Image (cartoon, rainbow, N blue to C red; front, side, top):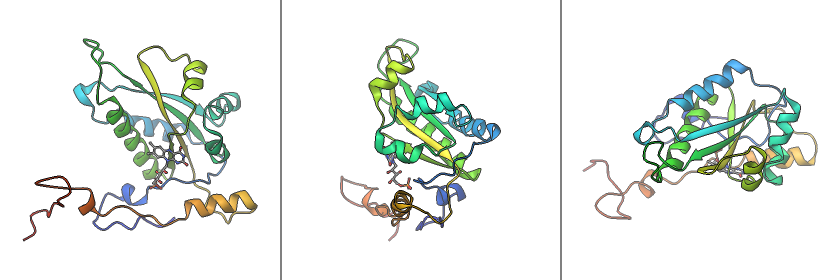
Length: 203
Ligand SMILES: Cc1cc2nc3c(=O)[nH]c(=O)nc-3n(C[C@H](O)[C@H](O)[C@H](O)COP(=O)(O)O)c2cc1C
């Protein structure tokens, strides 16, 4: 995969991050995996609550890996089965002190997930995040207590850069090879009022 066609220079890992549909079916070295979680750990969060938790399944532990794979939507299982690592994400919906609802817990989880993904990219790995998970199954399988909500899954591994063989691999290759497109900055940064593009001080 070539670098993302960024319009302004960014950190190397941001330019190189993407979501593969084809992973090499190989394990991820534990020291690299821990580095990804260390990066997630250092994400900012409201009141430093760190409302995120993660459930981990590594390819080398076959039963554990298959159990987590079964918690993904079937369409995601098709390709995530080759990842080296699967992770389920969970938020604490309330502040630890006071017990009031934490309105920004999901924001904080997203930030931790982004740290995780960018660290992975910097290590030669990639992450494919998923909203397509079976939430009630996750809650049941992993005995998630009240007040905690499962959210997403992450597939981590080495992207398979080989030529695809077989119909399904060719189809997955097409999915991951589509144009790398984003809205322009002017369509997401407004000033003065909603819909007025910011001009960043240009005359
Ligand atoms: C929270 C979240 C949920 C996602 N859910 C899925 C999913 O269930 N299945 C899937 O194939 N891709 C999923 N994706 C991947 C997105 O489709 C992908 O990030 C997006 O198309 C941009 O592509 P890129 O990550 O390669 O830049 C998800 C991504 C995020 C951040």
